[in-house]
Image 1: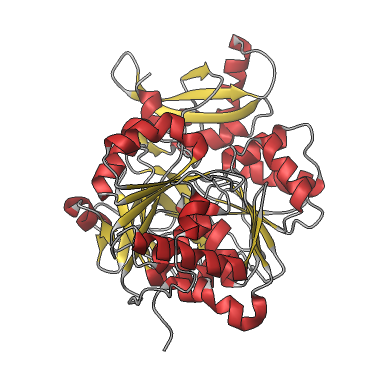
Image 2: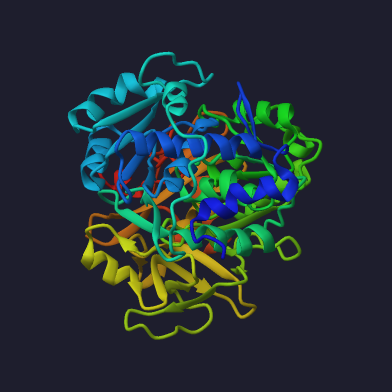
Length: 510
């Protein structure tokens, strides 16, 4: 009988299946085969046992995207403990909150993060701290290689039910403190066999490169579970995914699949070195999530790079993308249609279905839904209602069945008695050739009425009153006279989470 522990399917089966010698991961310094991955996750699990980390205890991974990430993630799960990858760009205060909230028994931390976060980890009183160096060298007692060497190489996966909690992810916290989202073992395989197989279409000869980091649900699927479901390879970038760094990775590794976010795609299109294939001679498919992809960015990417971007919506609560454009069905400006294996509907505040074209809250059903939030009962009950997960996103669905993002439910604007989507205004602004990025919030005018205000990053040139009026007129023509931004502020950057989501609540504080 097959073990319910996800490690058995994602890691161990590849060796007896004859895929042990295949490349699993490559970072800038090292590579790892599936055979070596199985052996090193076994050692990591054995080392946790030896260090006294018990079953179901949480092991926080403060790791950059290097080979040590999959070793620690799967090794912790093999031990029956619970890996908790967290955002490496969080403030020390937020990291301290998560360490306390999940009651971390151990922390695995990348060496470059020790300077900024080491004191926070020590202050949390974590019993076991393992330091990972990018090139694998760490002779000191608490270094990653020494820790691995202490573990039994024959450590088998801990017996587990498919319904048992396997790992946690923390929500991005774009509107408040992060929430611990508990996922079960079978959810990983479910996303691989739905989105990974039926939308991404990943196969054993693919090479995946995800600019979205593995600590995030989107990046975890892209870099780890989707390639590992078919014994394919993944290339890892530990540094920030700037356009220059991403293009260098594309030229060096020639990936066939690429996962990015809308902000990055916009930045890549603005890079003077963008070219067909984005530098990869083998690129066949690109995907996007994190924020809705503006139609103009998708169309320009297809024209310049020659490959469609399959935009979709996912969430930490659902683990990966559950509505998406499909390879043979791309409609830019929409999130597409439900991924096979998922159902979605749009409801009003009374939980009644809304007519086509009318905005409402998006709710989704699928077997990758989380088990709930840790120690957040009220929020769990609001979000997870029976088989349905309430996303907090406002969407419309057109008569052809395509879902279109309007904004977070708490970010929609009522202008002149009509609901206005901030994303719709942003999309109109971005379609102007002078605009690189835009974010829209509501602001009260002198009469106390809410109107749109835009924050705009320009491609080139200097802002002017003439440009303000040109952008306002452009929005009026694109989407309607009453929707144009009454105020436009030109900025050099926009506040975002590490996954590329614009933090509009921070703009409202300006």
